[in-house]
View 1 (cartoon, one colour):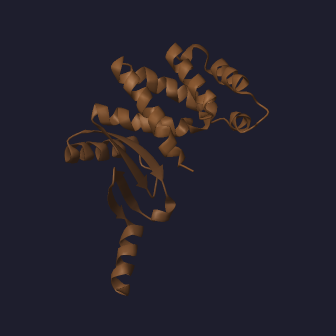
View 2 (tube, one colour):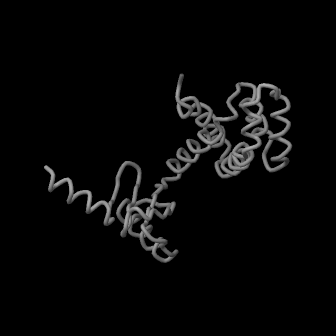
Length: 178
């Protein structure tokens, strides 16, 4: 059986192509966020996997909740997902769409993981340094992980900048045991 990400990719790429053709990336981003918000609900998740719930009922529920927050094309997209039993792929579809959108806009996504909470000024400073380094606009997602002991780890694409105490201790342990 194929991985959900693999199955979701063609849907995300089709929506991205449609959005790009109509210069509506932001509108589709909002629509996918709204649909994903509904699908992510635990009660809706249970209904998606319930064989006693028809596709029409599921479609009515999702479209009823999103209401007029989405366009007719986005409503059609929900219908396609429901008819193909792919509504559960919505988080993957949205994630891939957003990655394509960032790539189109020339934006890099950085994940900043800190041992302690960092304030907005520190995040802005790190983002500015990353933008200088990569010569592109950077958006940051910030997380806290106390297991790092101290410092910060930054992940941009497949590059990792590890300036954590945990990383230095692991490197020291590796050098001592080899």
